[in-house]
Length: 228
Image: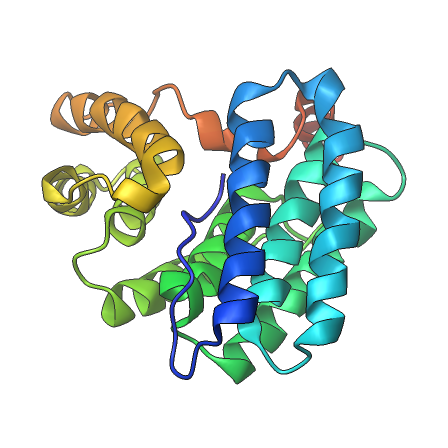
């Protein structure tokens, strides 16, 4: 999807770290391993739990980021009239989290916002905007210049934009980043996608398998096309 999570940041409290890590690990299992028709019930339960953590730690960025991520994947798994409102709510949570701690979860708020802005359609359907997407992804990279996810997603952005030279530079840097022991599932999925993206960039093709495009269902993409 979206960002690869790791709980970090100044003044971290063991209570919030442990609570977020547990929910984050369960979210990854649901998102990466369960079929879509089995995800909705799990996401509903995870939302309730992360919101309880948010109430307990109202001035922390991490619960806001994780809530936003769950909302986005929930919106895709259970597409309907409430999905756009969930995606808008996710954006508000991410922006608020940056005010608390822009470095939280290795700049996951910036990465997730970047993904949302370049994967979503623009006005009047949603708030997609390639220029803002690039700015958010570049902000994440400034904070964590050697991070796997920050480099991968910015490289993937430039690949979709057709700038293969820029894409290749970021993707090759992502390829050098190790898989973190605490994030084996999420980082492993990025590494799989990275290999496909690298091949596409080297062949100067912008068509490649992109698991993280599953943020939106095909019906939403089709609806976007019919309105243009």
